[in-house]
Structures are given as C-alpha cells and as structure tokens.
Length: 298
Image (cartoon, rainbow, N blue to C red; front, side, top):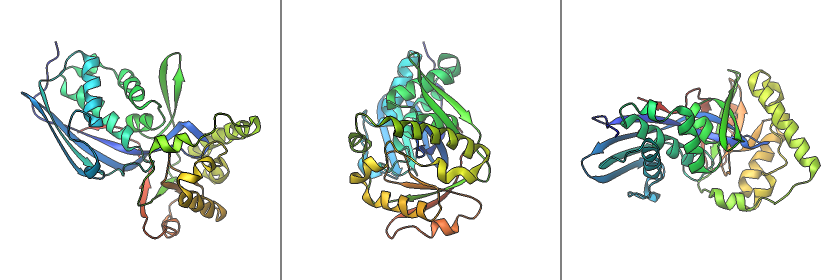
C-alpha cells in the first residue's frame, strides 16, 4: 500500500520541438521554455487551477490531461490518493507544435511519482517514460520533455526507447509562434499513406546528417533539415508557416516546422537577432537555448 508525502511537490518540464525536419516521429529537442506545476494530496476531492498559456481552453476536472496522466502513474504504482490539488503555470503555447501535451503528460507522471513515498522504487524512469509515451501515442516529444536535450526515440519489442545525443553549444533556436494553432490530429490527417522510395531514402540520409550536424557540425544544418515526408504535405493546414520556412531557407537559415506545426523553428548560432527580426507581424518570437534538463522535481 502506497504512502503519500505531505505537502506540495513541484515539477518543471520543458517545451519540445519534434521532427526537426527529416526526423519524423523520431527526433526531438528540449527548449528553454518551461511549464511549472505543483500538486499535493488532499483528504478528498479534486482542485485544478491553471494560469498562463491555454488557461481558457482546458478543463478543471478529471479530464485534464495532467490529472489523467497522474491517475495512470498512480495506477502503475498501485494506489490512488483520496484527493488531489493541482496547479499549472503554463508557459508553453497550446496547439502550436511545441509539445504542450507531452509536457502535461510528463509532468503528470513525474508529479505522481514524487507524491508517493518510495516512488522511485515503484516506478523507474524507464517505466515512467514508457507510460508517458503510451499516453501520448508517440515518443518524439515525450522523450526530450522527460530526459532533456536532443533525443532519438522509437519503439522496439513492445517498448519505447530514448537515446540522448550531444548538441553543439553553438546551436540555438528561434521559434516563431503564429496567433492561431493547428491540432495534431488535423496535421496528421493530411499525411499520405505511402511515399516514394526515393523520398524515404533521401529523408533517412538527412536525418542521419542532422544527428551529426547538431552534435558538432552545425555548418551542415541547412542541408540536414531538408524534409520530404511531412512538411509540404501539411501546407493546407498552415500555409503561412510553410511560406516562412521556405523564405528562411532561401536566405540560408535552417528552418523547419516544429512538430505538427504551425510554429516554425529556425536554428541559429550566437547571433540570433537577425533571425528574430524576420518574425512575421502578429506572431510571437522566442529566442531559446537547447535545454539540457528534462522534467525536474523542485
């Protein structure tokens, strides 16, 4: 029988960018924009408080994604608390391709483990990551949200895997966030059932090059971020995003659609002011570092 800790626990979890061009459903990067969440066990009931990004559009009951993720983790550890209070301070934009749902899922499972005495013994990091990826359905955002940094992830023999790779300290990221979002299900619905073999081969080659480029040869990032599998196919849902990607790439800036979009991520170096100056009117621009930390219990 689980014993719950007294008092609130807090966790922060980073925004993430997945795909990064050719790394569809396999490559992800943590970014220095973090949600902060706090939870504690109550004698009864459920209290959900949300501030910041997406606060007007999320439920305050058991259907809240963080609560659902906490419940799944408690189930994994064999005990549900009598009541819960959850407070979310959201910095990650919702439905923009910056991993807000993965951040919520990862925060939920990590919060739940932190609320259980001896939670590390009941749920290892591997088990929590497996659960989080199951809840999300794919690991490319969950992996960097959980582990931090640049992560290559996938599924093998019925389990999810995540392998961290190095990131050159010269690499930074500028994200351009449009005022309206695109739901992941809509973006995925635009993808074809099959692609030409030549496109798949070209894409796999660029994905391999991207690992090398991020790991110490950023001069290859423009070539390494070329995609054949998903970005152009999603243009009907985000024409302004694809136009910005093409404009930046034509100017020599390695730019991609972040995740399922519509945010655009551009890789830079120490001087990102010139990239940020290309932000379209009405869009938000964030000059971010690559975040080495994943979910952190404070």
